[in-house]
Amino acid sequence: MAGMTRRTVVGKGAIALAASLTAVGSSKRAEAVTMTAGFFHVFAFQWKPGTTPEQIEKARQAIAAFQGVIPGLVATHVGANLSEKGKGYTFGGVMEFADQASFDAYPGHPAHQALLVWLRPLIDAVELDLKA
Image (cartoon, one colour):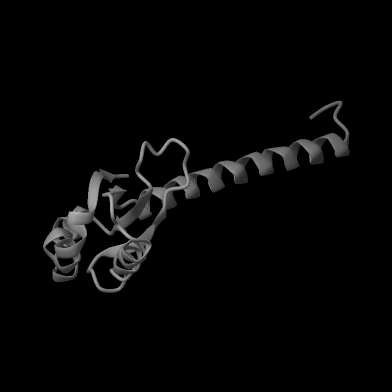
């Protein structure tokens, strides 16, 4: 450290400390993302002609009501598709499950089955299921 002033040493030390804290923070964020990764069910609907706004709202409410009813369902987001690139899919949602086993049990759950009875005739749907 010969030829370095106290200010230079302190300044370089502060930069090194900040860099190490940033690296630790980045590592913790990556760890948090890995720890919370689950299984996602993504869906979008094209409503068939004659579907009413009341039926669409009933579907939104019914899907949102799965939260707290379907075991392993961590989060539910559902509503109108606001994208201009929706290709006719005007409604959709994302559901996060704790794991794939929770998702695998979801289609047979009585609440989901009851929804499908009246919803299926109203929609053309696309679905994506992914582990992330």
